[in-house]
Length: 145
Ligand SMILES: [Zn+2]
Ligand SMILES: [Zn+2]
Image 1 (cartoon, helix red, strand yellow):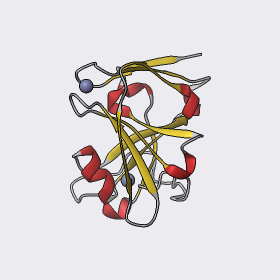
Image 2: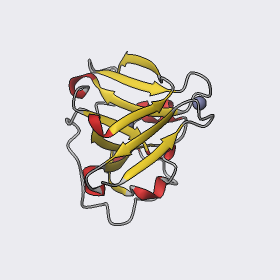
Image 3: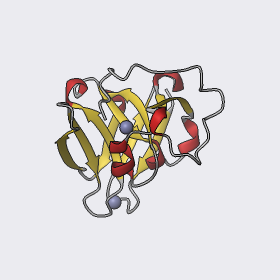
Image 4: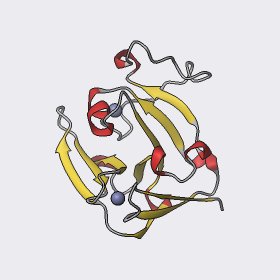
């Protein structure tokens, strides 16, 4: 079973992601307004993984919960010391999935993207990810950002 270690910037938070196969992670970019704000850059990059695949091995992330503006509660977990964003998930799927911030993995290249969300909100200078154009995901899968 491949395992992927990760941490926040200051390493107060450390975790281990265990997947039966890399195919169990679905990495995607999201260009929505909420992701721009939450990630502090022009898109969000997360890997959808089974909840139990993620094990926090050090520290406890701080949780922020808020309505995304359309009635869905979004949970966001981050390091309370350095502010690194660790994961997020919609309230509807909180017992099933986590959307892990790919940049928090020690090797962010281990789980390359398979698709993009909210492409209509892509900033003008950002190209499409090659090979992903034919893949579109249902926006109703619990991400909810
Ligand atoms: Zn930290
Ligand atoms: Zn988003």
